Length: 166
Image (cartoon, rainbow, N blue to C red; front, side, top):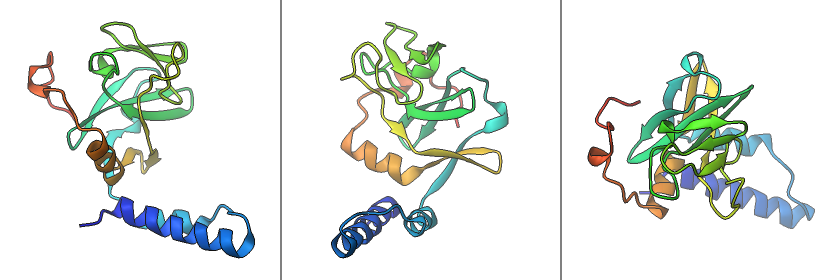
């Protein structure tokens, strides 16, 4: 079965290929955005009002750990496991513009997920937005990412991960 994320990608690509062929360039299109939004699998992962500035918060969509970070007037939802040893990034802390792993202190930019120290290391940044006071993500986008990046971690054996999560 094809997911809504794949359908939106196909629609976008066909529309952009057609526009590129006809006009010789690819304009940004509000219609493509509307089509993509109408087929998204929107999932609430947090209440925006409950998030503190620069305090990482854990969320779980499918089998993928996420970390939510509000900073200034921005919001990032990143893959929630450190690239080094898989520690939960929600157990880390923010230092300036970086999310720091609480176990071995690896760093990742809040706005991009890319390490400031080593640009080849990064946490994937997922699409996220605020709607009706909720922080939302597209579950299909996360599922597709998960298929390409199987989760090797045992959630039950990691510290206190048995506690309830979003």
